[in-house]
Length: 287
Image (cartoon, rainbow, N blue to C red; front, side, top):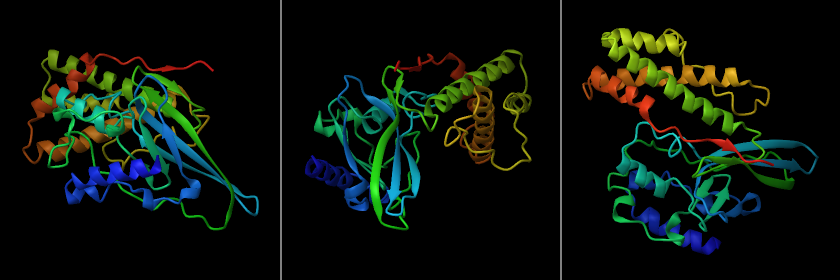
């Protein structure tokens, strides 16, 4: 299986622009002793994946390393994506039933070509852009200060195509995803109300700052409470998700509007459409 994954990865990288291919993880970048192969034996595609390593050294010390391998924002919360981009993302950002992946400390390697060939409109464009996704960063994995005695690799959380979530959820991926979903619906509704009321673009953006509780004078808001915080409440998740969304929208406004790429009206219409997006049902599977 490892050989098959490596062969497909070589083909995939060869078809990508050089600037993008260097961001694709490779099997060679991860030590085999701490890696595993995942096969999706369910009948549903995987659209979100979080894994944890628990390392135990020869001296008995334990530490964890958590890594998101597939963000559910790509396919479960595709608020800014066109249908064409979403279809490409469904190929590049999911694990189809029966497909296998190499999971190592440097990242995840493999694609869905082991279960079927991509359709024409699922192939990544030659410019290497999904049209909504961003570039990644490849690391060489976790640095281990002393020899390891035992390694445990756990699927901490997995989202399936129908919104089902399963796993220990130690890193609170489920709560963070629900909070992100609600934040976009709240902001989208606020913008819709402002447009219907005939408010100016500046007044609507001020309303976004109010509903997200964002202080424009503050630096980047606190990181999501999902990771390594088992005691975070639903209200804390919601507050953090709203603040981060407010910051992202302020940055988007400055980057796109200031450069003349879109008008403020176009940006606000895009955000207002969030309130009309069919809400995916996200649910925890029963133990």
